[in-house]
Image (tube, rainbow, N blue to C red; front, side):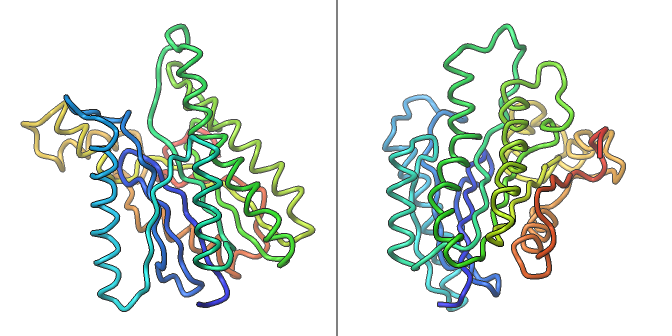
Length: 272
């Protein structure tokens, strides 16, 4: 096992998993959030969703194993503090430590303010804000002790430029940006660097599902070009383009960058 291990918490509608890398960028562990409230199917119950996500994890693990990597996977509901603690402890037991944490839990939930219930507000905050708080708090002590750590909070551009009908997501993400700055100030003296990446349009299953629901008879490439209207680069970004920046921020090459929020949106946001 090499010196750097990364736990990336990714719970979105497209790819809901956590990934542990070594310092050479090789994946050595996967974790995935069990969730069932997004795109529910008639007759689904909790164990149905769990089986689906565990199957996806197994498929990913087997594919990576073909490259000679030792991979383990985990299922974790990151909206629950007890699940977070259990998963963190298991990963540390398996790998020894976590040097880089990527908090990437979330879904696109946007409503008119007057229509958002207390329950909806709390669900969004638990998933997008408190998951980051709880996991960051758990890895913080080890990073301080080793005098090395990286935390990346994946938000979206609404954090900087909220629009009407963009809550609760925009509010949760703005709080995540404030959290980033607080942790960056406190972590600096311990060489814990904390940054945020603000996602724009990135190609994922989320858009494939939206295409199927809204315009199944339209060519997907045409549909994607329509989504990208208003983006100066004129296209949807790729997951690889987003990951490239995350890898840079997690590396020694990004060792003087902390407390910043970087738009990864092809220039779409109205603010820098």
